Image 1 (cartoon, rainbow, N blue to C red):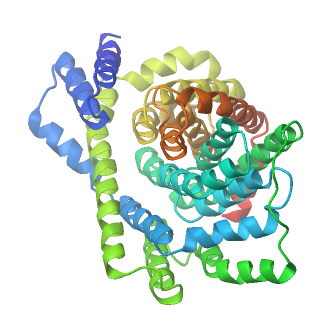
Image 2: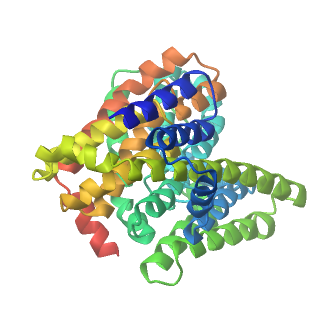
Image 3: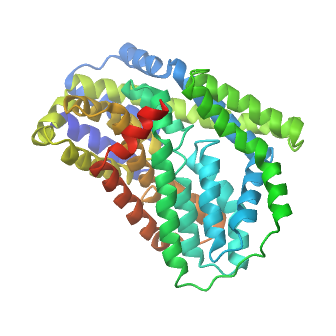
Length: 426
């Protein structure tokens, strides 16, 4: 118990004092090892190296670069234009455009922060000029942004798969239906809200304009089909899928759309390298924490606390959802995965729960943490882009958080919604 208290105390102090979370994880792990009398600097260096030395993690820089190139090369913009052409004319149409575009962008990049920034940058000026309530609109955009970690390709699934020794391909394919369910839940909630609001609508597009927008976006729409199809039929691994996505995005932006120059491509590479470095440092730092947690017997202690629920899978999963969401309010997305996965996975396996199903539920729970203070990374993005007060956006996003939590409970009560389509796709 003393070891756990040291871990929690160090982590809380570092978060409050503004220490980067990667160094906070290092200090927490070192503090645990010191208390256990196992502090060995060579062993710490070895754990950090081994944690980052993983072939599946190579997918992260490629998918990040693919997302950057898609934004710079015009693929994201064409997906947005397609959504505007299809449903921009209906009541509250820009909200539906945000949801549809969020799903399409999620199937391309898998980064909640990047997708939210693109959505907000393109839609906020139009929503504001059309008289949309900005707090609620930004809340919807933020809620659409967290679909990215659930629908493949997802950076979160890659990290979870490595940390929990779970098939990344199965995680990718099992996340399709829950991600679409999240979009449908947001659509229903926005529809109910729009019935009480007076919102301007855009002019209806003609059939030829819709066809033009569809043809223009066809190249971008083919990428998720290629990735999912390649994974389904075993043509390439998730790591190779990242390379395919990257090459495809560069070819589309440079050759087909001709919107990305060498200078812009270089800037995309620099941005992807910086983000990859931050993620990999987190993974290496979490290696120390995971090692300390293991030798301290924390999974066994937590299993003792959750022991009465091991025989009741549904109650155990509900408890895990609450734990992940609670931790997600204080930690960012990747640290939440790295800290909790090695702790919870042994309990899940002991209870006989499918690790892939657990991974999808875990990812959805952790994604909700991106919308909740005090961290709320996605909320910070929409507030910055939309130049709106944090409190206004927080009130606007609250109904969508409630709906996503209710969807999570539904998926826990009826796991077949995830497991059956996931098995069929795999």
